[in-house]
Image (tube, rainbow, N blue to C red):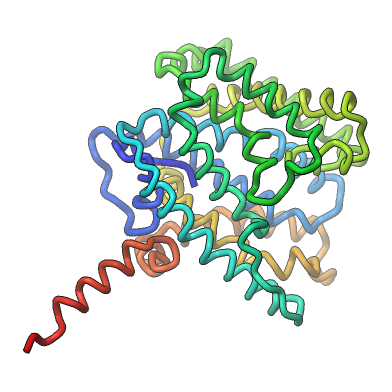
Length: 357
């Protein structure tokens, strides 16, 4: 889902995940892949437990929403900065193709789940596909955002102001693009030596305390805080806030996201092979997992099992799902859904194989 290889190309994540699991290159930072892998597992876990409504599941869900997408966007910005080339045409092709395909697939699966036709809407992202449109906008704007003086404070102010304008909403994922932009900007201006500064023992202890505090906060407030404030895709009026209250709430959400993103960076930096493989296949995992979760999302889970049992089963199943989907065979099988180049290669091969008269 984010660029997971230190490649010279800003669209390397699509190549790395949509073709085949690439062999590790000497310059590849597997700790970044592992961090991305951990985040994609948390994303799938959060979506899987969303139909559960008990206090434990609600607490975990709110806790995850406080940091997992801010951290993903931060890593997208950081790895975009690592790219040496900027090609608008290639960026657009590599993100818009899977967006269009999965908009249709979401509509098909949703239609089968509901038993009624649900037509795809290319302008309004379906569930998780918003990230492709936002990533497209962030990457296209990266050269200008990176040159902004005080890029993070400026984009922070833009994120707060976006909530006051009703027309900035889910269409084209514009609201989320502006709402999460400060985290992308942080990644663009991030310096490599800052990693080491965050990974000393005192800072890591503070990072652990921050995550613990966020979990306690989520437990205390899970019954009264709407998850919608973390999605950043609605204006303040839709959330029943005045502009002043909405700005204060969103400022708190963004600040918590920054603190926990830095805490996440502090507590990572290590590498695990299966997480690194999941990180390299993050786009595949991200795009495929909602297709399996639609029945539970729309109808809930059977009450034949207790909620605690469901939580345990899903907690065990999600890492296994990420492991299986990140296998080379699955990545190769899903490449036609992810990569327009696959179709171009088939067309070229068919052209060369055609008999000449």
